[in-house]
Length: 286
Ligand SMILES: C[S@@+](CC[C@H](N)C(=O)[O-])C[C@H]1O[C@@H](n2cnc3c(N)ncnc32)[C@H](O)[C@@H]1O
Image 1 (cartoon, rainbow, N blue to C red):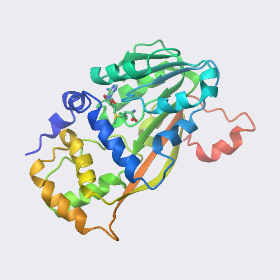
Image 2 (cartoon, rainbow, N blue to C red; image 1 turned 180 degrees about the horizontal axis):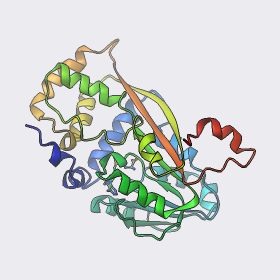
Image 3 (cartoon, rainbow, N blue to C red; image 1 turned 30 degrees about the vertical axis):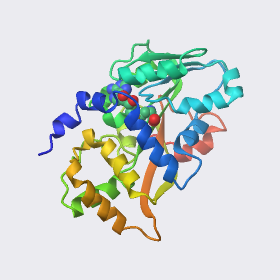
């Protein structure tokens, strides 16, 4: 019997992210088998509107992987931005402090549901692959909106249900493997726009095209089981899943679709500049 309530609870999420091991394993699979070699984190980092002296807050930073690209880019460091990385897990905060604290980067323990900053503080706020863990999404987004400056922008990445999730759920259904359908689909590319528009005037969706081509199915299974505390998947189904995915290989590879992307949200819509006219086509304001 699957305990859905427990799996989406704060305790289960904290257990999942008590240190960076699960996250590292899952990133490893994407690095090894993704068809798009740019990489999702690098693609996202390239989209952020960095400029001199701005104040940046990242929520749910995890292993802070985005910020490796910051250190690769001397020009950005010259911008002298004030950057705060944060997470609500002690293990992640320790990791971030050991790897990023210093210079213009500070690290804080922060729960997105109660952000300890004044109204209108940040020019840029980032919350990637974490909003689907938050139970009260309206409270989380209203907290982000509160600490975002009037002209500031909020970037949040998430997954779509037509990627890895659908692939996995189809396998579980066909094999009669019990799992928790609900735990991780509370903020996706499909429902994110609607949820963000309750708080923000302008919201735009940007997609990252990618897929996985996997030759060693055991790696995929480790990835799946690394999410087990959230999905409620029993280890006894390991061999069944291994045989099933191996039987689906074509020319030695298992194809797994991916659907990832991000939303950009702003507080105020002001199409008053020439440069904004093109944006009107993609920014949703109604
Ligand atoms: C899947 S990881 C994403 C890490 C990173 N943003 C990335 O994209 O690689 C989710 C992170 O969100 C954190 N998290 C979950 N709920 C949170 C909350 N309410 N407030 C702050 N952080 C939270 C977890 O501890 C974990 O580090």
